[in-house]
Image 1: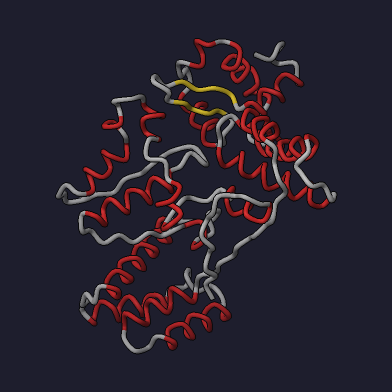
Image 2 (image 1 turned 30 degrees about the horizontal axis):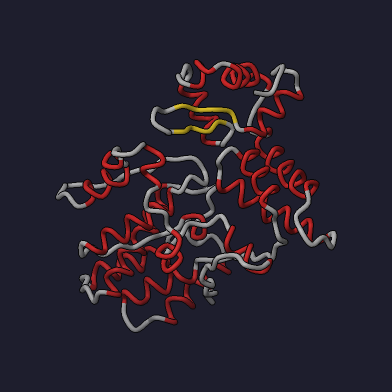
Length: 323
C-alpha cells in the first residue's frame, strides 16, 4: 500500500513543522508553491545563471545523441533532487516523457550494483510503455519476465520467490503487466513521520550558523530538537534541545575523519588561502562527500570546514581560536 504524502503548507503551528522542515526534495504541488527560481543567481552570481549545470543538462538531454547518461554530483542536502524535479518539469514542457526512480527506497544502497541500477531503468521504461500504451514485442517481454523469475541473485530466498510469483499473478493480464507486478512485489517502502515543537528565530539562527548552510543538517536538527523538547514537555525548542541535536550531527561527522585529517582541516579553517585552493583532490573529495567540508560558489569557488568539525578541532586543540 502506498501512503499519499500530504501537501506541504507554510508552518503556522507545531504540527505542520515536521512536514515543512522534512529534508526531502520538492516535487509536485510542493515544488510549484515553494521552489525558489533565483537559486542559481545566488549560487553563481547575477547574470551567470546561463552557466547553471542544470541548464547545460537540459540542453544535453534535448540534443540528439547516440548516448545520454549524466552524473549530477553535489553535497548531501544541496538540492540535487529538487533541481532534477525542476529538470523533469522543463523536459515535460518540451513534450518528453520522464520517469523518475529513487534508489534510496528501491535499493539497498550499501549493496547496490550496476545491475540493480539497470533493473530500475528497465522498470522505468516498462512504466513509460504501459502508461503510454507503447507496444513492446511479446518475445522480449517474456524473456525479461523469465529472467526476473529465474535469476538467482535477484531471488535469494523461497519467501522472495513466492512474493515474486504473487506479483506476477496479480498482473498476469499481459507480459508487460507481469513484469511490472514482479518489480512491485520486490519493493519495500518505509516512511517516518514526526511532530515538532515551535522554534524561535533566535534558535533558528543559531542552528543555521552551526550547520554551515546545509539544509539537510538544519532540518534534521530542527526535527530532533523538537522531538527532544516534546519528550521533556517543553513548549518551545530550548537551547539545550538545539545543542543536543547538533551534538548528534557532530558525532556523525567526526566518525568520518581520523587524526591524520586534523592538520589539513585546521589549515583550511585557519588560513584563507587554503580555503580558495585544492591541494589534495582525493582528500577534498572525501571530505566534501561526507559533509566535513562544504564547497561554496558565491562568485568564485571556495570551501570551508563544517562549523561543527571546527568546534571539534578547537576542543582537540588543533585550532587555537575560533574565527
